[in-house]
Length: 258
Image (cartoon, rainbow, N blue to C red; front, side):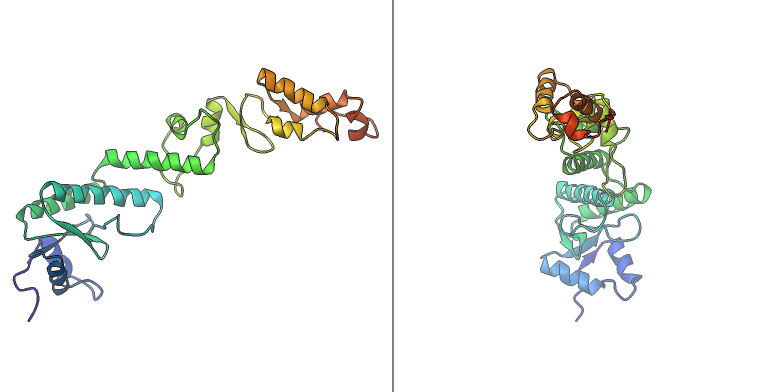
């Protein structure tokens, strides 16, 4: 005897099963799943394209962030709508399914399907929130920001939120320059300076020759006044040093910047 006797289905579940190719689920399978969940009915939500709406929380990561964010927003909004109406929901084969024996669920499923057919997002505000959070995480993962600068500070300056690490660019360098920061030319540490080619104090000190103290003394002065040097500045200091000059330019003819 078929298990579909007495089971209730929403229109989309019936249509999906009736026009199915060989790999789709039958009404018998849906009714069996409903019985396993102690439901008297089985409903599927249309994702607006004629396919079942995916459950985001139970699935792995398959797409780039922009696609994953959309799936998550629509799944969260769908579960919330059914929950508010007191309609039981569940995940089945990666889809959001619901107890079609509850009459309140039919109107909700139809409304969601119509909404997604006209516009692919159920909650723009939630999507923006996820894109912002993802952008902050992406910046924090890719860049070591200086103390006092947060990813949020940079995103507010950017022309648009870099919502996806795969599909969008992240103009952190331009945003940091707007805040008055450039990267050390040797190690990419962020420096509060407008001097192109500036080096951090550690990289500057590594230019010392042997045990000579001219460069370390110069770095101490830079630290005291909150400034940074370029390679040209360091070479000028060494050019005027009796110890460094003959070591770095043993044949004379020292030129600035080399």
